[in-house]
Length: 122
Image (cartoon, rainbow, N blue to C red; front, side, top):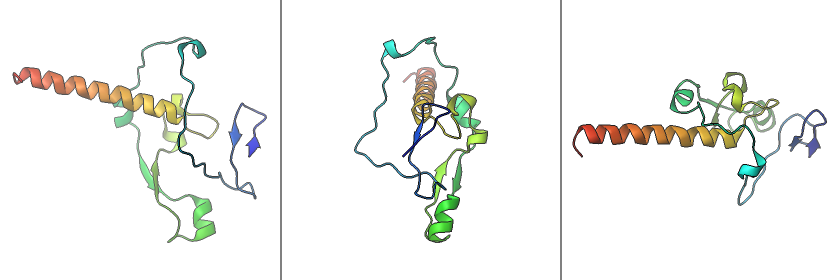
């Protein structure tokens, strides 16, 4: 574990400090009560954000160097430099905000489906 003095982050790092470690747990929870937040506004992020952010398959360099190309896992995700600003931390992406954007996009799609159903008389 490594505490970053430049921010309030703690990282799980490999012993040689060359890569991030993996966390496994039965659950990850995020504090989300209204009293922990300020400047609460409806989001402007949603389906357009998802549609305009590229998603890639890739292998982590550390895993390729450690386990070889054939044994390194293929992962799917965003590239920090191409991710929306509101998702970016110090070289990290905010998974909780990604879920919030996905949630909003689902609401937008459900509204579109309901509009189509209504126009078809369903």
